[in-house]
Length: 61
Image 1 (tube, rainbow, N blue to C red):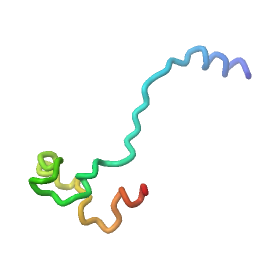
Image 2: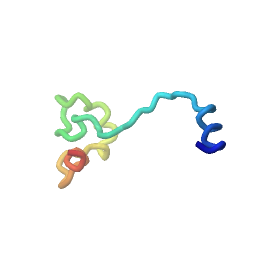
Image 3: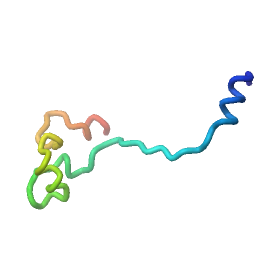
């Protein structure tokens, strides 16, 4: 290990890392009162992936 790498390791502090890999399943389902994310999607319908030719969920699978 070189001197610079040792210095970086000494300054390292563990942190929590959150990764957003996909939107909730409700964002891929029909927007109606039975959808658990209806209040959100009613305010922002462009966030929905329902009916898209290739959904983000398909691309992740």
